[in-house]
Image (cartoon, rainbow, N blue to C red; front, side, top):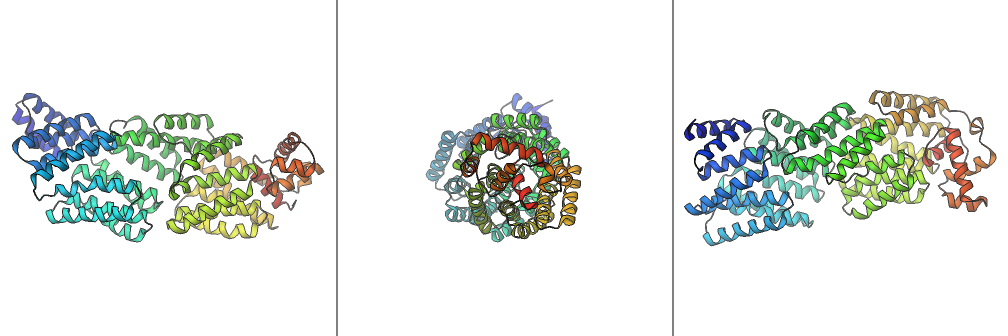
Length: 546
């Protein structure tokens, strides 16, 4: 086939988003004779959409050189910008800075008024956002959007408006942010952006919706991204992130088998390209979470290890796995470490609920209360239903262990309402277990059983085996503490444990050794059918042993 025929087919398939065919035809045409710069740019985009980053950069470098030779500085600058952009996200910061510096110099020497000035504001915006200079970042993105609008460049205008939304969201101005974001979604869905920019807009926006826990919008964007990916079955570049987002949403909705399938696809089929490399670690982590919730601890351990190898932080999931295995010291050490390394409030919000759970397990009620206070403060500024729900549930857990079931019930009703609105059955069932324990502590055994039975049904449907077994034990053991064969000394230890005393403090109070306290605690766990200090404390409150 002649180069002319290959070119014609390559251009046609490009317009149809048939990326493998377009890439093959344009590569064949380039093999017959060097492509001109405009066709090299088409070949570059095809390589990008197929996750072939090295080919993408090589084609752009050739196009950049041809544009310079022909005197088309703006187009050369545009190619150089995309090279720097790709290198930046591949972690090649020095080379990225070199390319950005080169094209800024070229544009300055050319003294030409062109839209590329707006594209070169994007690296500045990225740097400002990395340094948490959100007001400056908003202003820079606004300048880029104005340049895009002046030159009629939809790609620049809408990516810049999306960036304005991110800057507003980081300032806590979510209503303003999402007014911008929602319009960007309409533009992307309407096909008004180039293929490369459409994928970037989708993935960027879903990422920051997740960052600020805007779950409903993350779902909307993920659904739109899925439809876009489905229309391009040969595309590779954005499929990995799309599948990870779908896995996260499926897990929250209680569709755990679907979540596993999506995560497996992301980590096995779509591994090529910088975006997919980022997604791979997240996919392994998501697999670990589903396995942990199902009680498949060995599989969860393997998945978390795969996440670490892919550069993804496996917390708080791995710490909660250690907690479920009874390795409280390891769980506590991991969470202390990750919280020391995490300074941004929304990042801490992801870790603090697990930290509260671990602290209650080891009997440190006061530190758990301090963690709840921090979570409350984050929730007050975040404007997120998810953070509000986990904050309320964490507060309730502490109040229940501290012996105040009436206060806990108010928070739990709020959490339950939010989890139902978010269509999150597992989280709702966990909240319902706590409601049942509160009812039991207040002497309403009938309501307690109804709540626990409803939670049990949800856990059974989900396949949440550890929670199912725990709820079964709570339902089976309703009698007073004496019916479990607790000795007077074990009753004393249980009362102190419920008050939040550590083993060392209990030993001092009762003038016995810590080893003896530990033995009493394990005997108590076995007799009342619990696996944690928090659950033992809740049992003591529920049966009026304190």
